[in-house]
Image 1: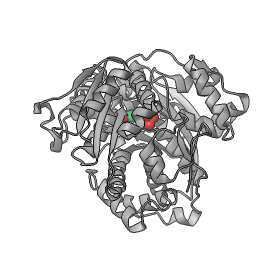
Image 2: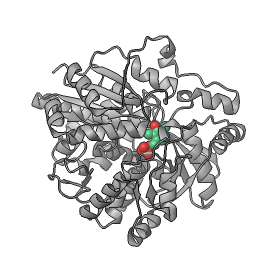
Image 3: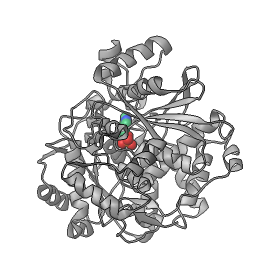
Length: 462
Ligand SMILES: *Cc1c(COP(=O)(O)O)cnc(C)c1O
């Protein structure tokens, strides 16, 4: 399996190279050259299988000869042993034909653990056997950073630096990043918003001297490995609701478009998905774009769902690449225009996107009201991101088609918003109950790439 860049001019890479590289050298994102498909029988055979078995079947065709089958099974087993639920991604029924896919039983209580725990295992094996090291730098609106620190802390071959927007993450998110004592872990509080963090990260990847000097690697969802691991739970949940014998729809609380893009890949692989619904908060660039208004950056308005406070959605580039018939030149042109503020989507590409994705948004008041309402109707306590999904799913779903809404974080990760809506302060799971007592370690940094690069060079163990 070979990987090509969405901007058409970077070297073609293997799975291992694409995973260790992150961003392509032409500024694009890596995607598989072709999407493998699974037969109806392959999918039917997943019924009753463990999460790990399905994960192997779904991901195996994408990894080429990077790992042997035995190695890959072992990596999967180790990654998902960290998820504190035997089903890994259990489904809960909210209403007739509406289901919640709980993706928050991992070590940092958000769905990011599903991909990053596996990436941590894959990096460790790939680097260890070559006796190489990397510097991982990640930008986070809160959950990628905590998941990455959890997956990479203490590893010999990796130093990890996480850029998060100062004052704009929840206290639980911040503490998950600042309390691990391992000295290869560095939490950097940037004076800016998440888009600034993501832009500085891209600046570092585009500075080839720095990039090669520190052996920069990325674990943001620009990394194909992230998207790939997220394809699995579309299969496990759809099969448990009757796929491939019936169509299933999904609603996905969306920010960087990684999770919903994984759903698109599942569909391309042959999973019968009816609707893929993008749910945004008030930072609704994706909803506006999918409604035909073009893709124009605004300013980020901080919300009670901070992990979705994004204006530049990096994986949307992968969706555009396919919508423009895999024309890397066209995508490079759009991304240039985005640098100046935004772009219009061509009519043909818009038709392709609207044929694949539906969308809706939830205001702050609607998000809170949904948390209150779902507690009363179902006893289920939703985090604000998951509540946005439920609200939009309720607006758009066809009652005759099973709808799966992805619950992307545990309510205890956002206790203030949940308490404000319900009066209940959700407790942390017992395994992390002392999080508020641990001491914190972080560095405040300006929103300036030179300062950041100097800091990173000065703090890697190398
Ligand atoms: C990251 C995140 C999202 C958005 O996921 P994308 O893949 O960036 O679209 C939604 N909810 C939570 C809790 C998250 O951590």
